[in-house]
Length: 140
Image (cartoon, rainbow, N blue to C red):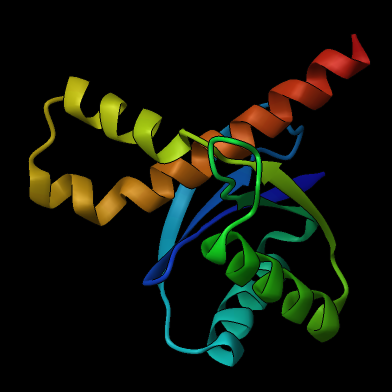
C-alpha cells in the first residue's frame, strides 16, 4: 500500500512517498507549479508510477485552526485532483511542518541555497510521516 504525501505551496509542490508497507516516508521530488491542469497531470503521473492507494495533502491552517487563503487553494487543488482521477485524499493539518523541516535542515548545516531547493520535499515527508505514524498507532 503506497501513500503519496504532498506539501502544496504557491510556487512548488513537495512530494513524498511511503514505502510499500506504509511505515516510512521518503521525499522524492518537488513539482514546480505552472497551472492547476499541469499540476494535476504531474501528480497523476507520480500516482500512477508508484501505484499509489491514497494521497495525504498538507492543509495549512492558521494557528487558531481556521483555514485561510492558502488552505482554500489547497482544497481547490484537491477537488481538481478528485475530479480528474478520483483518488482517496486525506487532508492533514500541516501547521509547523515547514518550520520543522527548516529546523532539521539548519541542524544538518545545509546552505540556504540547498535548503530552498528541498524544503518542500522535506515538509511533504514530515506530513506523510505524521500520517503514517498516526495510522500505525491506531493499529496498535
